[in-house]
Amino acid sequence: MKKLFVAALGTFLVLGMAACGPKARSVDSFSDEKIKNGNEVYGMVGPSQAYIGGQAIPKAWGEADGTFGIAEAASLRDVAKRDVKVAEAFEKKDLKGLYKISEVELGHQALGGYMKGAYNEKGEYVEKDGVYTVKFANYTYDDETEKYAIATWIPSPEAYSESLTPATFWAPLHTEDKDEHGLDHASDSVNIAGAGKYTYYLGVYKKAVNQSFYGIAVFQDEALEEYVAPQATCDYSMPGAWNSWNNAAEMTVVNDTTFSMTITAAENDNGRITQTGTWTTVADVTNVVTGADLVVDDNGGDHNFKFLAAGSYTVTLVMGGATPVVNIVANA
Image (cartoon, rainbow, N blue to C red):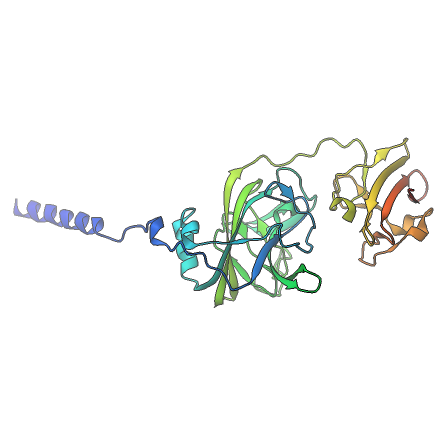
């Protein structure tokens, strides 16, 4: 009887100690003060098929005008409302800035048509469409031009970053040596959770933590169906600066071998003709016959044709010969 009593008492004490153990932190235990790094400006860049606030990124991987895709200062409590453990992870980093961008929509309205490699939470190699490669950027402001320009892409070899939510976001490796899948510190970061609406957080560290100067957390707000391209009615498209590099923008079928598109180009706008929905080149500046004086080679490696003057142009592709022929006419 005595032994039974001692055993029962021991069980009671263990349960009592467990009940008095450390409790999970409440959301209100985190600071609600927004953490802003001086006058630093951070925003989001990415492919034109990515959307922020219901609008496609207007300048793919380009400059910002100070109003689109700009991050707002956030608080640890804001993060804790999403995940207390992630908020604790940020708290331990000694932050000098914490920012967020909401309503980031990926993979639902369009895809990029090319693939990017990454690793999932289990360390397994995966490939995702290029639309999932949005990044943060640190901007500088030019008082003379009154424009913002990208100073640093985050992540990048100049801005090592770590993922605080590996189930949704992969950050590149911190090494110049490519691994067996060709990934290294210059690879693009990838959202590995798939099509959906997201909120992105960027933590700016006061000093490097395991080589990382930034921490990124990505939360899915809504899962969406991934975009499926409709059956193409024309095999050829003409992506370029004039349509935010939309390779799904089909040319008009004139007949079995002739296809055309009318565009409004700004000075120095460049692009080429591809197979619809892909980046496989069908024709470039080397194929231009009529209107060769209207364009030059943009010297970017793809031999895109670059328009010398702003204006309206009709571009015609003629197939069926030994090589494709491109004719360009300036419209009045």
